[in-house]
Image 1 (cartoon, rainbow, N blue to C red):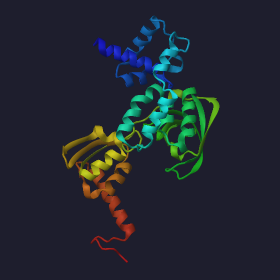
Image 2 (image 1 turned 135 degrees about the horizontal axis):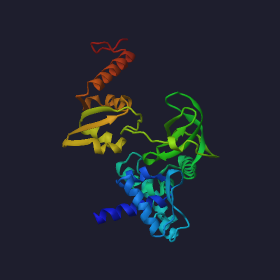
Image 3 (image 1 turned 30 degrees about the vertical axis):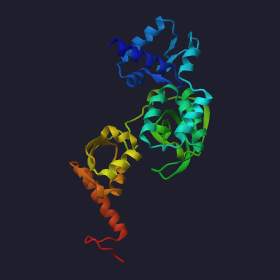
Image 4 (image 1 turned 90 degrees about the vertical axis):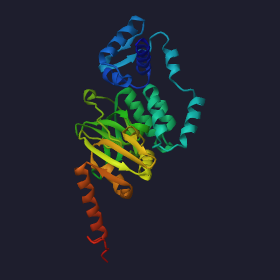
Length: 309
């Protein structure tokens, strides 16, 4: 129990001194403890001479705290260290599971440096500017954002507050729509960081995201039997699926998960129908059936399986 408490306290210290701002609730989620425990850690560190700021709901160790420089040095990379890490990860695909796990472990402490290490050159400036805006709690303009939903290309005024795995997407609150949205970083042409501070911090909330990187309040259960080919491709393209996969034998896996929509999992299943069996979920089975009928109609395939000329 003492060891676990000490581990939580050290984890708390690293989060409170890192480059990103965390609320009590977020810290509790990261170190897997109660918010009451986080409050106790704050008071304990204060009694030991640490200056802890909790303005606007965020928990930060103040720079005037003794040994602040020594502590920040512990969670920062030197230029040679960052260069070596970038070289090592540069050739690894963004969807690689081990890369995602490594980034997930390092990001809470110093996500700006991690972003500089793992993102591709064309996105580096965009990620850096978004990181700056998150650090300083500023609004930004996403110039010429390409929206797949509305099919529009236009500027978006948002308050960015959190990146997804591998910096592929960024969570941001959009005042115009009054909602939190996911924006894909590779669809952003450029970013302008405004002098305007966040005005809706209390409304910032990252919703549940399924393994196919789709987010919404809706939850739909999907259960699939996967063959070797589909299971391998799923792990390669969507590394967060591992926690939902159960191996039956060397050629068979069961995927049991909740998705936010049938669109993402539907595209995956339709492309590998020969290697996937839909289990139990009748609604999803009906969804796939309708999609297949639609595709056949577009291709001119009749009910008998022949192609109309």
